[in-house]
Image (cartoon, rainbow, N blue to C red):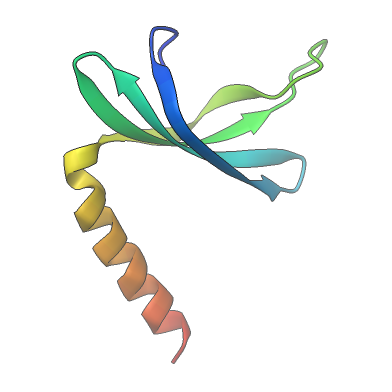
Length: 78
């Protein structure tokens, strides 16, 4: 989950039923990480907050993730 000391550099989101999925590039000194996480409204809250449902990976792993996601996408076209 995103640390409170993390600074968001880029953020994209897309809807998911009663929540949203956010893909963010965050600076968590001294490293940059990719955070892919479900955000939901909790009881008594007016805004979405990050949940434990997600993953945070170092930016160095991004090419591997993209490669495998592309392979999955290509297999869906068949």
